[in-house]
Image (cartoon, rainbow, N blue to C red):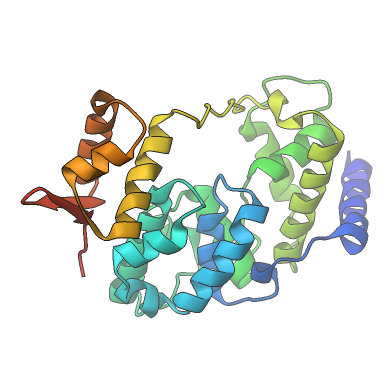
Length: 272
């Protein structure tokens, strides 16, 4: 097994030297930039994140700038990434970092996971990429690599079986690039084999976006970032869906603090 592990490590590094990818968030060690990229990359492909990330950093270059921004500005910059809740969480956690951490992004997962929208894996990945700490985490491409290499032909493999191997193989001196290498090999594997992650116990097929509640949520936010203020009647008439579908989604967005309504006028809820 030790020989297999050593061969695996050598193979991954060799792959990375010849086929490693380059992204704007990989050529910086700025914790803020990496925080933004990691939140954006949750459930979103890199080709969609690249242009949005660069524009976001230009418009909001620091954690203080993000904390001071209006939510409508953040959501406008977020358009095209989907899952607007992540943009709202990013805005909220920026405020907390400014207030509770003196504008310094924490360098340990225990503190990061206390922030809105940051789970265990994202907290660990921020520490690895921003601070080069040998944390242990898993995401879809890393999962693909370990399933393909160590669990070929097996089904319903839980992450609990993968994590010890991830911990054992993580490079203690250069975890940042080690994880880049794993992710890049995972992307390569997905191009060579049909959906290799299906052997994971945690694999789920993403629901159809067209006609979904997510699509209606996105349409409401998009209208409000475009028009700033709009009447309820105009908002509902601008969305191609029955009012009975729109109404509960609209009410949920209000309950979540995304939107506010006054005298029949709807706008993004600002809490500056």
